[in-house]
Length: 264
Length: 264
Image (tube, rainbow over all chains, first blue to last red; front, side):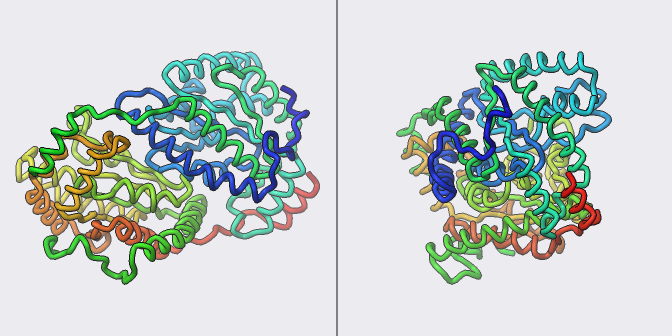
């Protein structure tokens, strides 16, 4: 995996244009929603499977849009979304995975992490918030942690939304030109932008270090928002199809219950 | 408020038919979503407001459909949904509001309670799970609790979805006739159905006892699912319009940031 060789403008696996992508997104929203309902139903009868979508990206890459436009198609009952901000003092006093574990979802649920434990090897590396040997330890800890998630029935989908520095510049400028977007802008964003190359390197290393057969990384070109949404929707649908949840059989005598109901 | 005088088949305030209702639901989904985004944005700059939608109803009345079809229009980032099941032993060892308080949302969020602290005066009354003096104490405790929520900036919307016993019978039968609905059926549902009149009485009393100016009850006729959805959507939109959240102003120098960005 060579991040610099992946064109953020590309649309791998999809030959259509924006309108085609939007049509796919709308059409497959129903399939995603139905698959999730089956997942939820099967969990009620003890099926252990769940999905964890981890979204990582540079600012403005479109994590929020994925949540709104892809995850938003699913029944809110079946979603648990958590955005990880800078850790609190209490969180800092624990191992970096402590606050992550608290947000893991139960069976039948699609969990969505907007940022994650990967911040602890990305920003921590770029800004030297932890010593390099600790960063190295964390790659291994993350792999152990994610293998444990997989073992308990979690499909772990790790997505890096990959934009170009030019595209980020255009999106930040839009936030400065639209008063309804000011709230999304933070002057500190430019400090991270100044470290663009270092962040790309940190992503490159983290992805290589933590790419697991059972919990692979997907680098999704994201200069075209519509494409990134279609791609992540497809990842979710494929994970759910792979689980192939089935409607639980009746654990009661259907005909007997019909009689009881008729008499009620 | 006389529950028995409210026709579950009626559609108060709405003169259209099903297709009209569905069109309204689709058209206003965008408004609801936009208002919620503004609420979320304003909270980032310190606005304290949030919304708490409490859904109570007999089985099959359509709580789940409200969540999927009304709340589902909103960005998942702005929703926290919690379904209260029968309390655990730990929860039972605390005051009945203990587990409720843990699920209260922060500013900017629409919280949705599928069942709530009202179970502790409804099923507890009908099945004598608590002594009557304790139930009486709870009505007062609930009012104090909800006044506290209102004081901290919460719009509390309490909805009883009101169906007829006949409609419940038809919906339970559907669950017994469709294998993809078996998982929603529980033989215990018929025990509650046998106590229909007692539950109606318990609702009647609870609603009268806890109807507050700042946290009123809405009895929503729900034999027509489309109507109940339109009505609850309207309640949410009205609450958000009443808050009237505004886009936060820039807390930075916009022109200066444009220069910094151009130089980056």
